[in-house]
Amino acid sequence: MSMSEELKQLRAQVDEINVELLNLLSRRAELTKQIGDVKTAQGVNKFDPVRERDMLDTIVSSNPGPFDNDTMRHLFKQIFKASLDLQQQDHQKALLVSRKRQPENTHVCIGDTLIGAGEKTIVAGPCSVETEEQVMTVARSLKEQGVTLLRGGAFKPRTSPYDFQGLGETGLAILRRAADKYGLKVISEIVNPADMELAARYVDVVQVGARNMQNFELLKAAGDVQLPVFLKRGMSATVEEFLFAAEYIVSKGNSQVMLCERGIRTYEKWTRNTLDISAVPLLKQESHLPVFVDITHSIGRRDIQIPIAKAALAAGADGLMLEVHPDPAVALSDANQQIDIPQFESFMDHMRSAGLIATREEELVRN
Ligand SMILES: O=C(O)C(=O)C[C@]1(C(=O)O)C=C[C@@H](O)C=C1
Image 1 (tube, rainbow, N blue to C red):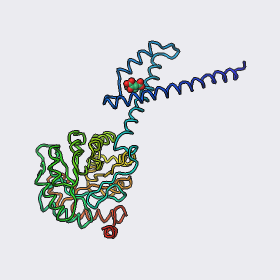
Image 2: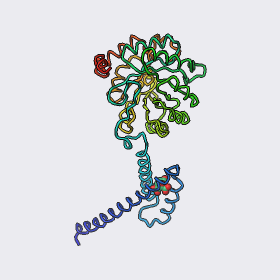
Image 3: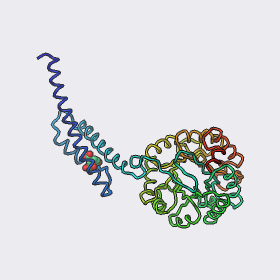
Image 4: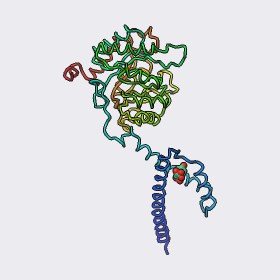
């Protein structure tokens, strides 16, 4: 037999084994998928290192060679890992917030404002509610600018316990009065699950802040409330953890959830956080929920707000959140990053002339 003939025959045998391996791997994968379903139903971890170690021990003890044990361990670990990925992908598919589960965008309706249906929405207002006059001034400006959603913090989760903690219910009442006077809707953060009922008396949208993104009791309480929820990404949360947090709310029956990327913690010091712009298209791709970008907290500076806003909208965000204060220099929180009313007006002019948000004429036609 010639060399090339021998090679051909050997290769033919390898080809056959490849097909056998392929079929065996596929059969194995089908079984591990079933195991994954059983584990999901039982609520147990997919990853089982003890089981993996036992299988490796059995494999190594009956290894006929010529592959050495380490090579065998490596090959089988790859198979376990691929099986685990398969189980987790299947689980992911089942998430209620996932686009695989619901291909069409979720629309969140707040008064006359429809979010997630194509038009870009602006949410603006002071970081903290401080006085009636402060909130009224900002609300008047929002009204003039055609912005319908007023934000303001009444319960402030602050890094230091000695910093201003917010006005609580008094602050919520101020927001409600200002919103009612100018025909706006209120978004405000709630930090305590026990306050959800109180919130429902004053706000139109409950915000769950970055520091509470994995406060699971709060997420469940937000899932029980009959109001839309504005969920901010935790400063150290992965995109996947962010979606799981949203799943907590949706799985309780509240499908009116909006996601907000607000920057993540990195070593960069020239911005307050690092805006993870890639999270925007990723979230839009993986989930059907509307996505916002907080252009105030993500960067913590005013001078690059316009390019950041443009980047967020270009990346597919459904809206922007920003902080506006009549006199940021004396603000009780985040004095360095809020913009004043003239800066807000100029910001809005800029966005309109860039064609990124509806012009006044378009708003008039719409209303
Ligand atoms: O036997 C299990 O519990 C499985 O989930 C299957 C399997 C495997 O591929 O064999 C996958 C992942 C686990 O870490 C352990 C084993």
